[in-house]
Length: 472
Ligand code: NAD
Image (tube, rainbow, N blue to C red; front, top):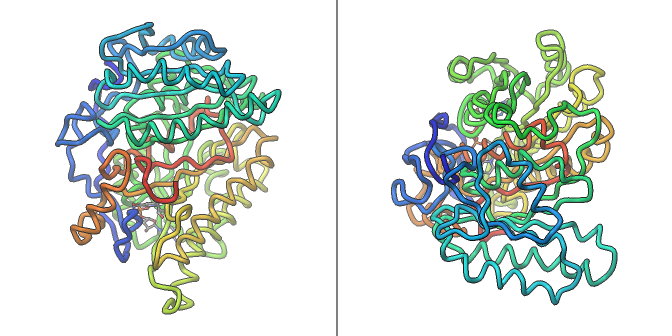
């Protein structure tokens, strides 16, 4: 299986949706419909241009030759991290699955022309749905002004190339801090495979993973790459439908035992998801005053603690501020922000609830970054979630625990499918990939951040939005 070739089926994520919305073009209006057959080869199925990790190969593979530059400091680490996945690295290929440019040796802006020289002539030969990956060192580590300037310039380059590359290809900047070279496995497997189909124009920072984490740091062997979450226990809130159900399915497919949580009213749907993924269901309203204590008790008594926590449950109550009721405000803030904050605090404070090397992933939203009319409550809650991640990251790092957010953009859902055609088309088209994402695209990003060898990534918010034109 190659970078863009088929292998295996991704779990379907076509559950229903009950949320309400006003039809914001960035997609926070509902959930999965799964009505597109993304098929096996991103870029060809159902007329798509590349988004949709569903049904696609999950790992970069042998027939997906990757053209990589030599000369920087990181190319060897990339080769080593992907050694067991069968990626063929070549100096030149007619239609490469990925182009990797190692810019880690940059010391001065004058050298930026190397990007043009390498990628300019090759970018058109990239396969449909291919990947461009620029590797660099973080500006914060630069020894002098010239190096800082050069490193910082890369973000503008990557974001612009993402907007012009077309044909479902994506462009990412991976900045690896000194010592982070050995923590690249999960991130490369994500960024160089169709799993990242709806992630483009993003900057990902990898720091050295803290010692004493869950082990398997390199995770380069094939078995670990296939089921990277084997032996882990995961909690997914709001798992009865939509993106949460897709996350539960993806984490389970990656080897985790999944505790699926949702409100009691979702009993049947939640049980169905839990059955499908071979996990358990926990009926709990996360806003209940007793929820933090009940959750900690459940996870410690039944499972000896949890390795992965996904704060996915969320609601919308869209209305312009002038007309918004107290109840509409309070509901959104308490479900989307205050409950995750309280649950996280309870899990962190309990000595055994979070296992060593645990991973927390929160669902933010593009609208939490860009804002949206009618969503002062929602956008405040989702920006607050980014704050939760930023505030907890340094505290939890001491325990080898990471906390990150994913910020979805327009995700194809039952609700977005029922939006007025023009609003829907704007939401779909207003991104570099010119289409909506799928719940599984969000789920794949969550699974990447939840992986044992993603310990070098914390405090970050990764957008899964096809490089939306909003809030860039
Ligand atoms: P959804 O409405 O389909 O599912 C949310 C789930 O959360 C439901 O099953 C619901 O019952 C559950 N839930 C709500 N309140 C709860 C509570 N108090 N306790 C426990 N569970 C509760 O939503 P979705 O579209 O799948 O969204 C999932 C997450 O992704 C949300 O946080 C949402 O804000 C975010 N998001 C979605 C989109 C999109 O396009 N759909 C875009 C950006 C962000």
